[in-house]
Image 1 (tube, rainbow, N blue to C red):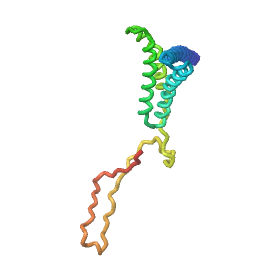
Image 2: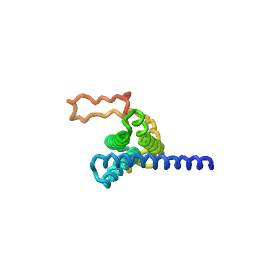
Image 3: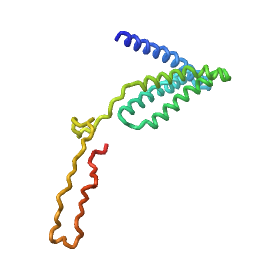
Image 4: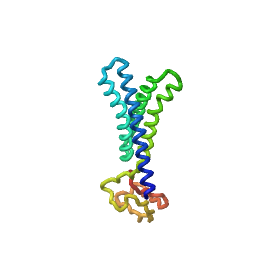
Length: 179
């Protein structure tokens, strides 16, 4: 128990250190690129906050949507777009060489990897059943139903001109709830 808590504490500490450093580098690169292209200093910081925090928010939104069974397509595309904006700003500020680009991309890639690991390791909860469904059978397996052939139906005397009703006792019956 103590070992698990210590390990968990170390993991959180590493997450905070890497996240803080990677976030600071990413914020600085986005800010510097914005200012270098003619925007005032405060807009540089506004862009940095928007780009970096949107990536984090969208990751959290994907997690929340998956828990509730809602679609994540558009949110996933937006997450990729904001992550690419951050990565592009870091690479644009780098020395124009392969190693310069790789080294500049490390903080953004490390941060994205940490966000992915943290968001994907959350416990999943089963979807909530429909409110009108009885609680007793939410997670029960369906029980086989023994079918007995129905009693033959005699048509009324006035229906003598219609063909007889054909009952097929060997035909399987489908019974269930579509979710």
